[in-house]
Image (cartoon, rainbow, N blue to C red; front, side):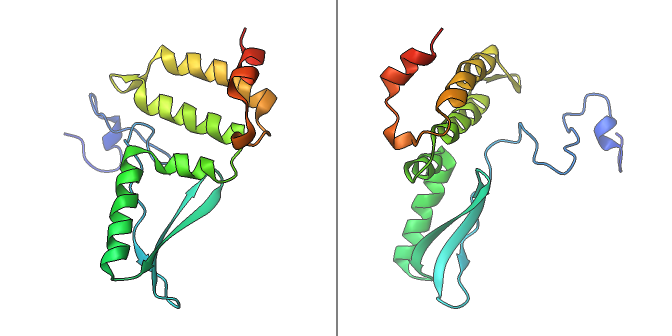
Length: 151
């Protein structure tokens, strides 16, 4: 067994160097930690996604209502439905495409590697993001616009 700094070079080792980033196949991101705001006393959490910081407040810290709201948020985070609520608040088609590709990378894997389905989705969504990336997702007419993009 190889130990120390070069342990990831050991034959048969599943640990790969990530160069300061989270490993791609590391599973879902951990749920943001519940914190207490120092001045208002509200329970909240914060996370960074889509090149900006997001905040979610749950009510007065230490109350059963705030704990229940945070537990619901943690369940939504684990199932991936928090991303849907981010999209619902003023996102553009490019944001939706990015979230879809991330979903494909998580879902379509075999033996820890992305399948060809990921590459098919990336190539199909590239044109959608290129043509309609700046359109608000709420105003996107899916059937009409999808017909324009298909080959």
